[in-house]
Structure formats: C-alpha cells, structure tokens
Length: 102
Image (cartoon, rainbow, N blue to C red; front, side, top):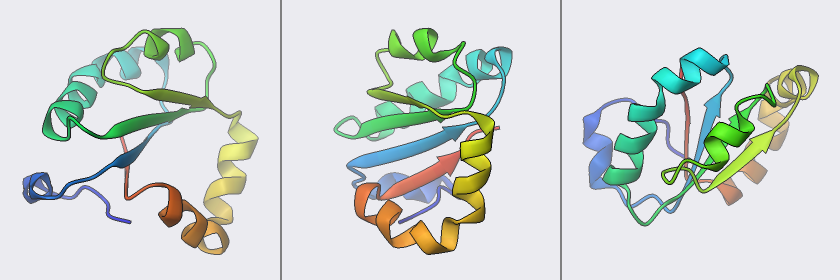
C-alpha cells in the first residue's frame, strides 16, 4: 500500500486506487479535477471512491474518471479508521494506492 505524498508517485503503476472522499457535496465537486488528474496519471487503474454521504453517489456514478463508488455511513467510517491496524493487511490486498481527498 502506498499513500500519495508527491508527484514522484506517477512513476508507479497502480492498478487499484482507493480514494477516501469524506467531504460534502460541494467539496466533492471541487475535488473532481483531482480525480481526473489521478485517472489521467494512472489510466489503467480502477478508481474506487469511498463516500460517507449518499447524496453525491449519483454524481460520482456518472463520472467517467471514477470506476466504483462505495457508500458507508459515518459510523462505519469511524469503525474502519479505528480498526485500521487490524484490517490493514486486508486493505493492502485489495488496493495498492490509498489516499484521502480533503
């Protein structure tokens, strides 16, 4: 698993990318160019966006730069983060790049 920290990451070939987008609808719209940039940098990747609010699900579902959208309510997100160290290996097996957009 790798976290995006700088532009040197574009030299890697990431196949499965998880983006935590735990923000509101307006912020998510403002982050769309970032998602486009990630997809253009890694065109063969499968981009999954995790959201905590069901409202932007339709917006992201119609976004050609996002392959999958996962909706989980706030209490599940808190459980995932608090249990991160227990489930870290499982997440590494599924995604090879994880980042959070704020």
